Image (cartoon, rainbow, N blue to C red; front, side):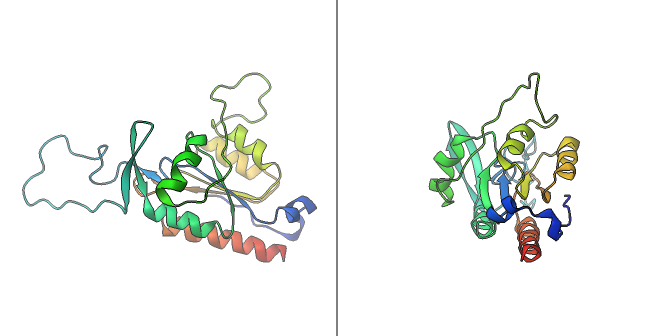
Length: 199
């Protein structure tokens, strides 16, 4: 997780127009969890011994999205609803328009959130190299302050965040837990410190 400390000179008139920071939200590994105890990816190959303790699964429920089962975290959804008070939420996930189609109905998340579309292959003239989401995130965000929550950052993401002229925070989740109270508190604190710096 890396963030630039904001100062008064970090904010242009455009930033003051768009006072709230963006929150780029991944879904798989943030809201749709996998690898937790009892999930298909964490089950032992053989039989479980009698009397063996079974770790509790996270708070959530299974849903089928285009024929694929997803375990959607109720806690992550509640944290996102709270974070919407401080951020403009944007879906930054391979789900693309499917986020809008399913998540408001299944988890009570806000309807009408923007979503990014991604080009999977890069051709000549790409302005951002590295992670497959960077081009779309960079184009959408422009010079706005942003945080990005995802379970799969690489070094190009950190280099991009450090080089941006606007304050940028990357928050990594673990796919088995997703967005928890810890990450939500980090994001809320960061956004409110930025708001105080602007004021």
